[in-house]
Image (cartoon, rainbow, N blue to C red; front, side, top):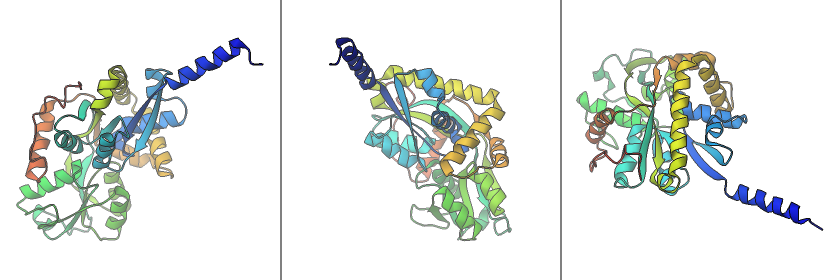
Length: 318
């Protein structure tokens, strides 16, 4: 017979397991998402950065996305609770939901984005982009909006389906293959793909965005309503990790390299990580004014026509 003491112990263990919280976090397998890559990698090898700071009653699950719009759809669907994401998809999601679904918790990275052109000299000046094919990671993502806004400033007619320059939203791995074969003339993307296009396809950086906000940490309003203390602990752990990255560059690069190698299932070059790292600045700080220019660019490119005040976006409150 099962003893009463054993039964009580079993019921206690079952109750503890049932009460364990699960946080589902999105990120991209990009160096610009170093905090997410490190978080996922340390979880993978059993000493999770975030788990150690959130405690044994929290399980963290990591989900990789190709670009921001997909991550935002996952937030809307309730499939994830937080995500590292570019600012434009976050803005679009905030406006689309009338400010009811998305909150920015912190900054994550600046820089690391660039416009890369073929190294054969076919593009030397902005005027040379006319009639060319330019790839971006995904329609409406941060680099896609930046490309459209910049081209419009150069005097080109740019529409969402055509115009003077052909903009082709294409997944980052496919961009590299198309660029190598000459089927596209330029790519507006982020690290590590900027360095890969340089090193593996002979690309040349035409324009860099060293001060642009590249990555944010955002939360669903649902998480802030249901588990505000959990969201606060995750934000604090993110800020601590961001500071650690700044103080421990060699160790951070090694973890990012290991995480990207695991995600892509092939060895990721140390020289590639080092090259990309030089273009990036990791910071948990964020000023709303940094986002206002992005709103103007998005509106210029035909996005965010019904922009809302951004006060709730940065409130950290449901």
